Image 1 (spheres, rainbow, N blue to C red):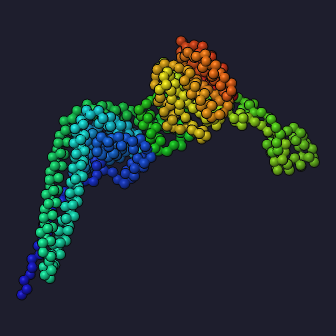
Image 2: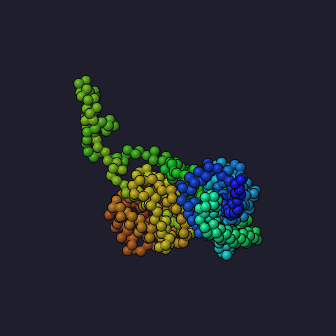
Length: 538
C-alpha cells in the first residue's frame, strides 16, 4: 500500500494593515461627489488646503470632515483603527467642536444645504489654520511629530505590501515544491531563500509597526495635554458663525444680484463671496445701499427726456416711422402716393433723419476717485463706495469703461481698480470685493489720484470722459500742476464732478480749483445722491 504524503499547511503570516482613509466621518457617494464639485469650483478651498497641508498632514481631510459634519443629516464616526494615525489632530479638533452646543446651533442652519455648509466649512477651516499657525494648541515640534507619524505610516504601508508580496510568492513556491516532490523535480535551496526573505520582511514590518505605535502614543499624549485656549476661541467663532450664516447667505444673494451679472455667477464665485460676507457685515450693507441707489439713479434717468440729447445731422433711407421727414409723411394723405409710400416703407426706402446720440458720439471712460483716508472711516466710507458702485452701474448701462481710483496720502495707498475690463462692460465680482474691502487710511492728497485718472484717459485716447472725486477733506495743489491739469482737461474734453461729504467742517476751496460742478452732501442718504447722478446721466 502506497504511503499517503501529509500535506503541510502554509504558516499564517500577519500582515499589518494601514488604513487608506484620513476622514473621521463616514460619507456616501453623493456626499463625496458634492464635496469634490465644491472643491473643483472654489479656488479659495484649494489655497486653504495648500496652506494647511504645508503645516500638518491631512488638512484636506479636516475640511472634508467639517463639511460632512455640517451637511450630513446623520453623523457616523469611523473607528480609530480605520483612519490614518497622522489624522490624530483632525480627530482632536472634531471631537472638541462637533459635540458642542454652538456647533449644533450652526448645524441646524446648514444641514442638507450645501451652500451654507460649504461657507461655514471654509470659515471654520480658516480658523483652524489660524489656530495651527499660532503654535499654541500644538507647537512646532509636535507638527514635526505629526509628519514623522505620516512618514512612518507610509513606511509601514510599503513594508506591509512587500511582506504580503513575499508571502504570496512563498505560498506559491511551497505548493510548487510539494508537487515537485511527488515528481522528484523540487529545486534545491529555493525554499530556504524564500523563508529567509519572508522572515526579514516580517521582522522589518514588525519594527516599523512598533515605531509607529510608539510615535502615535507620543502624539496622542501631546494632543491631550495641549493648550485648549485656541479651541475655546474656535468654539466662540462657531457660535458667531451660527448667528451669521443666514445673513451671509442672504447677503451673498443680494451682492451677486447687484454685481454678479444679474445673479448669474457660478457656485465657486458664490462660495467665495459667502466667505467674505461671513467675515464682514460691510459688504452686505454695501450691496443693499447700492440696490437702493440704483433705483434712485434709474428713476432719475426715466424722468429725463433721453431722446432730447440726440442730434439730427443728416438724411438717410430707412423705415423708422418715428424719424420720417415731414414731406414723406404728407404722401400718406394722397390716394395715389399713399400706395407708393407703403411700398417704399416695406423696402426701407423712405427718407428719414439720421440721428447721432451720446453713445454714437462716443463717451469716454468714467473714473471715480474715492477718498479712503482715515477721516472717511465708517459711514462715510460705505456711502462713498456705494455711490461709486452705483456710478459703475450707470457706466455699464451706457457701455462705458469704468475705473475706481482709491486714494489717500502716499504712493503705496493709491490703488487703481479696473472694474469692467476691456469692453465687456460687466463688473468683475472679485474686483468689486477688492474695492469694497480696501481701506488703507492716512491723509488726503488730490494730485496723485487725479494724475492716475488723467493717465487712464490719455491711455485710452477717448474724449468726453467723466472724473468723479468723492472726498471729505482738502488738499494743497501746486500751481504748476493745476495749470497742466487744466490744459489736459481742455484737450481731452473731460468733466470733473466733485462730491464733498460735508459733515460740518469741510470746505470746497480745493475742489473748486479743478471741478466745474460740486455737490455738497451733509446727510448720507439715498435721496442725497440725486444731484450726483443727474449730471452724469444727462
